Image 1 (cartoon, rainbow, N blue to C red):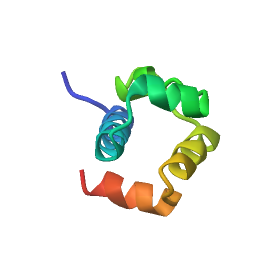
Image 2: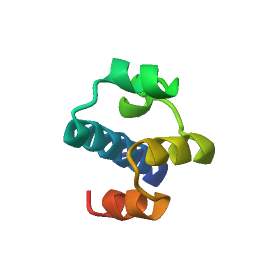
Image 3: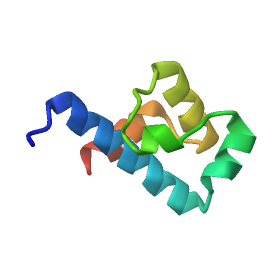
Length: 75
């Protein structure tokens, strides 16, 4: 199966979020309790993430969206 560039980007976003959670030692449940955002489907690459949601995620981890996209490009 050949993935489209959009599917590849979703998978990279998912991996980047998982890495961030691991770095901060945050569980999916803790993240949900703190933010109200369900990351599981995003981390599975099964749902798209809005810019608004991505900004909330970046704020939670105290990084800029630019930092997030730099991390994304390094994956």
